[in-house]
Amino acid sequence: MPTCPAPVRRLDPAAAAELTSAAAKLLARHGSATSPDLLADLPATCARLSAPLRHLLRPVDTADGLFVLRGLDVDDTELGPTPGHWSTVADAGARWDVALLLVSTLMGTPIAWDGQQDGRFVHNIVPSPGHESEQTGASSSVLLTPHTEDAFHPGRAHLLLLCCMRNHDGIATTAASVRLTGLDPADLDRLKRPVAPILPDDAYEQAQQFGGRPAPVPTLFDGPEGLTMRYDPAYTPLEETDPLWREAYERLGRELARVSVAVSLEPGDILVVDNDTVVHGRVPFRARYDGTDRWLKRASVRVEGRRTRPLAEHDEHGYGQAALTAWAA
Image 1 (tube, rainbow, N blue to C red):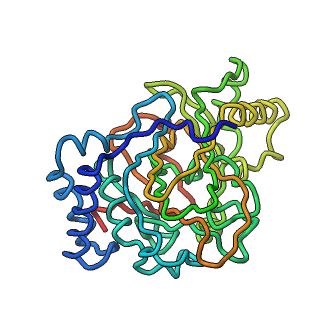
Image 2 (cartoon, one colour):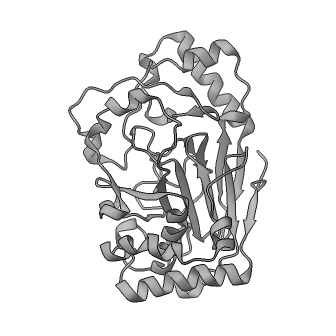
């Protein structure tokens, strides 16, 4: 698996200062990164940013389906220790929450989930004791299987942003684009049929208790700009599918592994992933729980008017989960 081949957009010192200064002013004005007034103020603040900065912070526009935004400077000492659970983060790194929200707003509309991390628009991804072997961001000792973010839900993000706060051990995020795979036509046809459902992951306890019947969804479909994907093998009941479809699904997994890249983020890096075409995961590591472990901040972005999903998704129940938008928060 190649390491760190992702395209890089580099912020020069002036652009980085402009973004962080805007974030600091917003935070000082509203007092908290979770303030509804701050969220409502994001579009107006973004409109005042310079044209060169807004151009740098445009959505993914490369065949890779991802890029790393580099040039922000995170002070490791000022940040404080890596928390042991997202719920204990409080205001740590709040300026970076706001910076990530500004980047998200320039690319689309930030979204959150009522059933995940208390409805926050920026999630903290840290290894947590007792969750080492789960298929969630709180795990550490297992491979986090490549997946579409929130694949179970029709309102999932179009773009996923991961901002690195700390990564002393160089732990890699994996990514693979479906448009680089080489499946044969028969496999493509099979995987475009709705055969298996995708169930909510372990981060969504309320959704896992939803009483509605899971509906099968297609894994692949054709969008206006090419093949798109909805994929989460860890939460797809493959044992209930027919052998030919399952073999095609497994070949897709092998193809994604073949084209996968490993991106080792540095503090201040923001990895931007097209969630319609690229699956992401993480290599295993040993968490120390001593305040120095890997720490990412995550934001999800919806791009209004993007036509990358089948119309049939509009009829899905989403396991009772509601997507919240920043302007309505």
